[in-house]
Image (cartoon, rainbow, N blue to C red; front, side, top):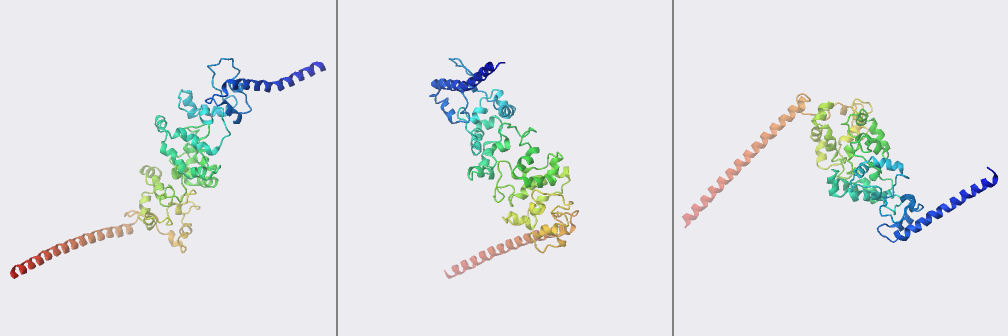
Length: 402
C-alpha cells in the first residue's frame, strides 16, 4: 500500500469516526420530533439518565417510518451478566412464562429516566410489589406484614432513619438480579448460605459461630442446626435491647427452647430433656419471667455465637470454666459452683434429694392449703350461726318489750 492510499484510508476512518456521532445525534433529533413531547414515553428524561450518552437507535435499532410494532429495547446486549442472572431468577422465569405482573428491567430501573442506583431507595422499589396482598397471595409469597416488618427492624431503621448506606437492603440479602427462592441451593437466602451472607457484615460473629456446635453442625450438613435467622429472625431483626427481639434477655429462653425442647430434636441428637422447664423453675427463670433483664439466661452461661459442648475446654460450661462463668454475676464463685447440677430435673433418676424434698413440699403445702380452706369455711359457718343466734335474741327482747 503506497503512502497516498494509506493516508486516504486514515483520513476516511477519521472522517467516519467524526461523522458517526453526528449521524447518531441527527437520528436522536429526528426521534425527538415525534417522541419528545409524549409524556408517557418521557424521551426528554434520557438527557438526565445514565444512558444520556446513548442514541435512540443504539437501543431500538435503525427504524423506518412508520414503526408501529417497535420491539422494546433489549438490555442484554450491554448488560449480559445481569441479564443472565435475571433470566434464571424467580422474576425472570415468571416474565418468560408470560406473567405480566412480574417485574422486568423497566419495572425496577425505569425506561428513559434510568438513574444511578440509590441503594437507600431499593426497599421502596421492592415494596411496590411485595406489599400488594393480591400478588403475595397469587404467588404464595411470605406475606405483606412479613415484608413490612423490615421497616421496623434494625436494618430498616438504619437505612430509612439514619441513612446508613452500608446497612443491608433487599438486594444485599436477596441479590439484585439473581433473586431465587430460599429452597434453591444457589439462593443467597438458602439456609446453608445464611452464615456467609450475614458474615459479610458480621465477620467476628461468623467466625465464632462457625467454630461453635451449631456452626459445626451446618458444616456437616445437619439441616436442623440453627443459623443466624433461626435465632435473630429474618425481617424481624431487632436490637437486643428491644423487647420484641427474639434474642432479648426476656425472650431468649423461648428462642432456645424452640429446638432444645422439641421432642424430635431431643430424641435424634440425644439432648437432655426439659431444658426450658428446669430453667424456669430456678431463681433465674422466675426472675426472668418477672422482667429482670440482668438475671442469667441461656446465653449468659452458654455464650451467644461461640456455643460449645461442655466437654470442650473452651466452653463456658466446662467444669474448669464454671467458676469464671458464674463469677460474672457472683464474684465469690469458687470450685464448689462446678459441683452442683445445672438444669436439675426433679426425678428419682436424676436427683433423689430434689425429688423427695419437692414432693414433700407439694403435699405439705397442698394439705396446708386444704386445712386453711376448711378452717376458713368452718369459721365462716360459725360466724353465720352466731349472727343468726344474735338476731334471734334481739328479736325476742324486742317482742318482750312490746
